[in-house]
Length: 423
Length: 210
Image 1 (cartoon, rainbow over the protein chains, first blue to last red):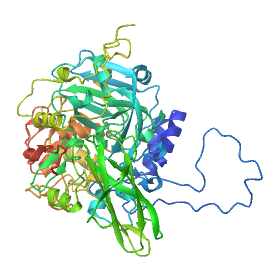
Image 2 (cartoon, rainbow over the protein chains, first blue to last red):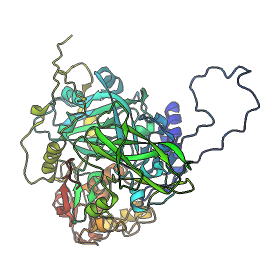
Image 3 (cartoon, chains in turn cyan, green):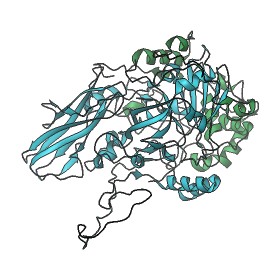
Image 4 (cartoon, rainbow over the protein chains, first blue to last red):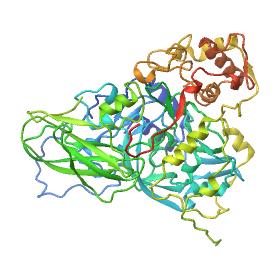
């Protein structure tokens, strides 16, 4: 858990938001360089040493009493890798996780001016612009609407930048693609909220704005608002955590993470995109033809093997190759695995149920014979889109392109059993 | 209880609108709509309005947060600023991070610089994007500075100060002359060098990688 989150939470309890902001600034003066590769490209989660062997036989004495909240076994220490800056990120440790649901405290974070300390009693969402009635909703109001619960992935569009621009063998799945998480979101359909205000026919976009110091804002096509957009207030069964947007955020399934405005405070119905900083100078994708792709919302199909991966060392014999795949355009149709560097591919087993715009875990058993091998996964989504090779990606978009780095990831297994990122 | 009108379809008919020509965003929006039919379960179960949830926003509530500025200049406040005024403000409030002439400092964005003029960013990740070589709209400067700058004290600058800083940044980028005053009328008229470099998203799933 990040310092920012701790401070924010204490501040809410103490009702001292201003103090918290000051403390954050004092504590964290540095800012991330957005031109640089993602922070912590080589980050290996700093796992504390396992506790010393116990001298007590647990079969012979009673254990600990019940508790208010559970904690992980002292032998299990999955942690994010915070950069410690106000515009930074903190990455999900894929290599420590199984299944498809990211534990709430390990969901990646990325923000543009720190985590705001928002008192839910003071929270409000204003809806205005090209509507019949300007409306204000409190958090309690939002919870009175019919709720929807869906499982969706959420991925930063810059996910994979460090691995693309500055790949290193010692990169974990966390360091490569840690700005992606998946879980069960609960909230109100955005369409329900908009219907309450009454959207005028002239409204073709909406501007969503956050309640953080950056007041991050993005223009969203109105079609998405009435399709599957949610104003979410819960994740994996409990209230959103501050770094994930407490008390309410926009969740646009399949769209790049920055559009899913956290700490949502305002929605304005408009008839042209706002052209905010984060949809012009950032989050646009330069292409080798000398243009930049704009409003490139959808995250295309991607997959990554999460085990075996760096820093694991494996023994000859049977191993389960396992990872996650997802697509912003719908369901994953197939995931193929290669253990010979992409010469031959076989279909992996997909974990059911396969959900649209959500993680699908894939698995394939592999008998490693002890010789050098390169293992990789390739996702195909329901539109027939196939995860590209790095060569195709680079020749199509260029070395200096930005965002949407979804090419095939590979791992080299050495004769010593050491698994490293194939660069 | 009022009858609920449950519609299981998307609100296509109600969200359609006549499109304007000449706005980049319209073609982008239409391309998106055409390219990404959702296969997601519809989040929206549309109800007739409940009418008793939430309250009408007061004009004061809306005014307090209605800060956005668009390329047409909608939302720009009264006031004005010159290069000279802006230079003073920039030195006091911006230069510590962005450098005396917007050249950037370690870890903080460079604002000034016109090269490369061929928009070759995709060829080399080391090329740094600036206001002068990348930003398509000058109004974004007001929108962004007003919402987020200075980084440690957003919302603390007056409109005159912001117009001045914008005049300074644009003139340092040699996009406007040093004698041009920025205000609600002149700022939207500034044509940025990279204005035509932005294209709608042409990815659409399927077998072609773009």
